[in-house]
Each structure stands twice: as structure tokens, then as C-alpha cells.
Amino acid sequence: MRRLVRAPNAAIAQIWADLLCEAGYPATVERLQLSSVAGELPPDQCLPEIWLRHAEHEAAARELLAELERLPQRRWHCPACGELVEGGFEQCWACGALMPRD
Image (cartoon, rainbow, N blue to C red):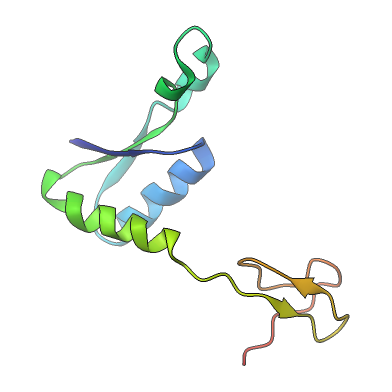
């Protein structure tokens, strides 16, 4: 096994690990329980980590995570209420209308 990256929190760590597994790169999240000892240990040493089961997947897995950082964020105006919606949201936070598919 090989450590790929530290994640900023447990939720993101699990999302990254799930995406890697779906892409065919078996990964696990380690150090999930260390957040409780942050302060006793340096906080950066208590972050969750993503580990790959097979070292030969490292380059492709790093590229996949890099692609996630480059995902475009869309801004759109809700066709129902006119609210500006930013980020990766596909539903208006104000009225619940779906993003137009243009």
C-alpha cells in the first residue's frame, strides 16, 4: 500500500477514496480517528489519508484527483425566481427549481 494524499477532512477523504475506487484504483481512508488527539499530536499529522492498495496506480490516481480540482464551476440564474446560483449546484437554493439544461 502507498499513501497518496492527506485530505482536509473525513468527508472529502471518503469522497476521494470512493471516486478512486470507482475508477478502478482501490483506495482506503486511514487515520479517521486521529482528529480526536489533535493538540496532543501536531494537527497536520491527524488529517485523514488516502492510501492506494497498488503502488502502480499512483500516477493515474494523482491525475484523477488533479482533474477534480480543475472541474469548472457554473453560474446560472434560476429560470423560476431569478436567483444567481454559483458552484456545482444543480438546483436553486431559494426555490428548488432545477438548473436549465442548455
